Length: 441
Image (cartoon, rainbow, N blue to C red):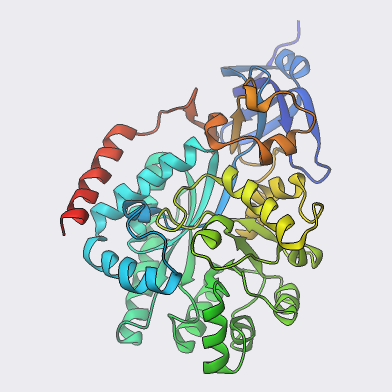
C-alpha cells in the first residue's frame, strides 16, 4: 500500500473555481494546503487517496474559490458608518468626516474600527484589503489579530498645515510601519497620499520618490468627482490624470481609486503608464460621483479591480455587492448588456485585485505554489439553485452571507461562519462605545 503524502488541510467535495489563466473549473474538486501554500489541485477522489491531512473540510457541493481582494478601503471609518449620509463628497468630507476624524480618531478607535471591518470583510469572503487611513500601525495590528492579508499606508493630507512637517511626520510613521511589519506574512506597506486636491505637488513628488526608493506601491484617489476635474483644470490647466502624469507619479506601481471622470486622453495615459485602478461602484453611486467608464478601461486592457471604499461612504464592505453593482452599472451606462460579463467581474474581484497590488504571483487564483487564500460558499440555498453558470450566480445572486469558510495564508480564519481568530462580540461592543461618545459630542 502506497503511503499517503502529508498535508495540513484538504478542501474537498466542491466545485473549484480556479480563476487561473484558462479559467479552469473542477467539478467534485479538491485543494491541498501545506503550510501557507497550495500544493495540489484536482479531483477529490484522486487527491483524497493521495494525501493525508490534519484537517479535512467537506465543501458539501459548495464552491471553492480564491478569496476576494478589496483594493480600496478605509477600515477604521467603520466607527463613522451612517454618521453623515446623503451628502456630496466635498460637503461630506469637509463638514463632517474631517472634523469627526480630528476629534475621534486615536489609537484605540483606529484599532477597534479596523478590527470590526476585518470581521465584516472575512464574513463576506474578502481575504486581502488595501487600506488608506491614519494610525495605520493600529490597522496592521488589527489585520494580524484577525489573520487578514492587508496593504496599509498612512494617508497623507498636506492642506491643513505645514507640508514639510506633515511629510516628515508621515515618512517617520511609514518607516515605523516598514520596521514593525518587516517580517509579517500578512501586512505590506504602501505610500498613500490622499489626492492631488489635498496634497501639494511637492508632497506628491516626494511621496512617489520615497515609494520608488523603497519599492512600494503608490496609492491615491483620482478623478472621483466632476468638481475635482473642474478645479484641476482651473488650477493646473489639465485634468487630474494629466497633472499626475506631468509630475511623474504614474507608473506600473501606481494604484488609483475611483477614476469616474476620465476623458479619452486620460485613459490613454493610464494605459501607457500601466496604472492599476480600483473601481468603487457603490460609493460612487451613494456620493453621486458618477459612473466610471469601465468598458473603455477594459477595452484598453487596463487592470481594473474592485474596492468598497470606507464604511462611511458605502456603507458596507461586501465585495459581492460591489460585483453586482459594477456589472449592472456598466451595462446601464452604455446600454450594452455585454460590456462587462460576470466572469470578467469575478476576475476583477480576485486576480485583478492581486495584480493591482502587485501580488498576482502569490494570491488571486487557486494554483499550485500560490498562498492559500481561499473561501468556500454554500450553494445549497434557494437563491443559488440551479447553477447554469457559477460566475453568473456569484455576481447576480450570491452575497457575502453565503461564504461559509475563509482560509488566509493557510490558516482557517472562519469555519461554518464562525470567526475563530478573535472575539467579534467584544469588537462590536468596543465600537458601540466609541459611537456613543461621538453621538454625545
